[in-house]
Image (cartoon, rainbow, N blue to C red):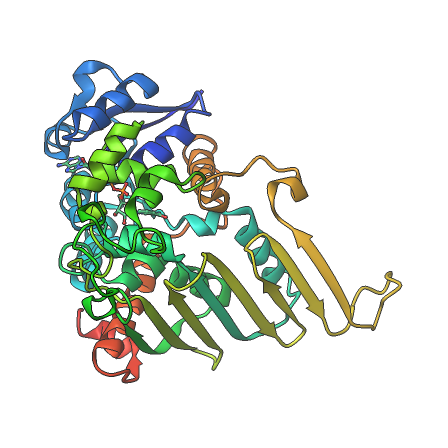
Length: 435
Ligand SMILES: NC(=O)c1ccc[n+]([C@@H]2O[C@H](COP(=O)([O-])OP(=O)(O)OC[C@H]3O[C@@H](n4cnc5c(N)ncnc54)[C@H](O)[C@@H]3O)[C@@H](O)[C@H]2O)c1
C-alpha cells in the first residue's frame, strides 16, 4: 500500500488543524515535527504518535537532515515561510505551504522559481478552494450554467470580533511584523475569484483605510488595557474578558492564541487578558493594517470583478456571479441560488422558460463527509492532498505554485494601487518589474 509521509514545521493553530484532519487516514503519517514550543510539540507527539527523537525545536534541525519524507508541511507565521520553504525545496521535499507564500512579491517569485527549478510540487493552503460550496460553484460554472461570466461581486465580512482579535490585537495587526491585511486575509479571496473567473486579471485598482481602530475613536476615559478599570467594559463589544474568557460560543482558537495553551483554563484566560497583547484596548494598539478595503479587477476578455473586505459586520462571505445564461448568488457560502434565463433541457417541463435552482452544499443538505474548519476547507484540503499522494488523483481544487504566486501578485498590485491613492495598475507591467 502506498503511504504518504510528512513532516510538520510549525505546530501552532494551523499545523494542529491539518495534522488533526490527517489522522483520519492510516496511510498519511507524520514522521517528524518541529516547533520551539514544548507545549505545541508535546501535543503533536502524543496525538499524532511522533517518536520522541523525531521532535525538533526548529525547522533548521529537521531540514538539515537528508530528505526522509514525501512532504514538508509549513505552518509557521507569515514571515517565517521563506527560509524553511527554501531549505525544504533544496532537499527535494514537496511542500504544503500555508498562505501567504511570502510577504513580498520578490520572495514569492523567488520561491516559485526555486520550486520549479527543483521540480517539486508546492500546494498553497488556499482552503476555500476545497470547500464543498466552492467545488460545487466551480462545477456549475464549468458545466456552463451561467454561460460566459461578465461580472463577479464578492465580499468578505471578517467579523468585528475576529478582526479585533487577529488584525488589531493579534499576530496580523501590523504590516511590518506580518503582512498587509489584503494579503493576510484576502489572498484566499483573490485566488478564488481568479479560479472562478477562469481568466487572467490584467488591471487592478484598490481603495482602503484604517478608519475605526485608531486612538481618535477610543471612548472618553478608556484605559490602555481592559483590566485597568476601563469605565466602558459593560458596553464595549471588544471587552477582552468577554471575548477571551467569559462569552460562550466564540472560537477556541482566539483563546489558544491569547494564552499559548492548547486547552486554556479560566486562570490562563484571566492571565492573558491582564498580561498579554490580547488585553489591550482595541483603540490603543500598534495596529496599522486596513480595516476596510475594496479592489476592482478587470480580466483579459473584459470581464470585471469587485471585491470588498471589511471588519464591520458579524462575519461571512457573499458571492454574486453574473453571466450570459444566468446568475449565481450565495449569501452564506453554503446555499447556491442559480437563476437560468432559459432552461435548455429539452426533456424538462420548464424547457425554454426561466428557472431558479437552489442547491444546499452544507453537510446536512448534501450528505457529504466534508465539514468543519473554514466551511470544510481544512478537511477538504487534507482529503485532496491525501488523494494526490496516495491514490495519484489530482482534484480540480489543487493549484500549482505558479497560479498561487500569480494570484498573490494581484494582491501586491492592488496594494500598490491603494498606497498610491487608488491608481490603476496594469498587472503585467507590475509583474515585469520583478522579473
Ligand atoms: N489557510 C488559512 O485559512 C489560514 C488561516 C489562519 C492562518 N493562516 C496562516 O497560517 C500560518 C500559521 O498561523 P497560525 O495561526 O497557525 O500561527 P501559530 O502562531 O499558531 O503557529 C506558528 C507556529 O510556528 C512555530 N515556530 C516558530 N518558530 C519556529 C521554528 N523555528 N521552527 C518551527 N516552528 C516554529 C511557533 O512556535 C508556532 O507554534 C500563518 O502564515 C497564517 O497566516 C492560514
